[in-house]
Image: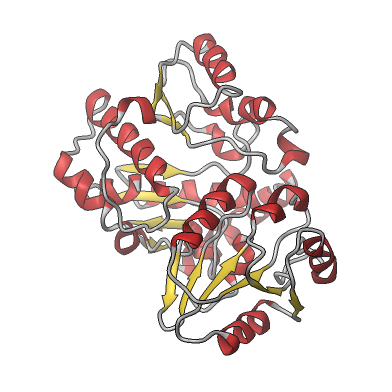
Length: 345
């Protein structure tokens, strides 16, 4: 959203995100255009010995590639998404104009901690001395953590939901985007007020309504077809899935078909109770090493009254759901970013 608005305001914008859905190059864009393959090859060729000597991870190399490309392209501003956590993330080498933390959920607990406060501590690692920080959602478990770290860094905190009162519209259809919109608007207002970046309210409104066109973002409550209606979403933790499934239940349909796959590190006892019992399930394993064994997923789902068959791959499950669904039915595919990545989007 922030990148889209900045593009709308006439700036040359670098955008780094992860993971990608279809093409690795999606991670690194300038004004919505993916980095060319030649630039990736030349970066690796030019730095291969250094990369091997330092034993950098895939993510660390990708961050280096992004920063190098943005420098070559002489972008006016870069929007950098943290990969995992924040404090120890390789993206955290930068000194930002504004730091942004959306919301805190119990995700990647094996790396970030088992409580919201512990995870907030890792996320708060991006708070820098004297740099304002925007928090998307005020939670009683995390607010004290942010307050303490911000105080130590002399960084002013802005809780977007408390400051931004206007409800801006966006082309992103997920209900969960309402909080993200306010978070983005707060960050953009700070850029306009406290830096040389200038953004009008008209540019904010237009940019928010053209996020997909400007940035190529996919997989966020995306409608893939109608008759039957098919929706996919990359939500994969308790907080995200809860909001998506609530929105799914608001849709009009005769029967609900759910294509579901997850990765190994998800707590099934946390996420499976969120899913509706009155649905037909198509269990699958995303085609990555971290993918959850489909039989284990099916057995876990049975404990919560979720019934369905297992399939050898996401596309087989998806095609079976499409075959079974009538014109008035709804098909939802998700549970993992990696499930959505295998769909024809």
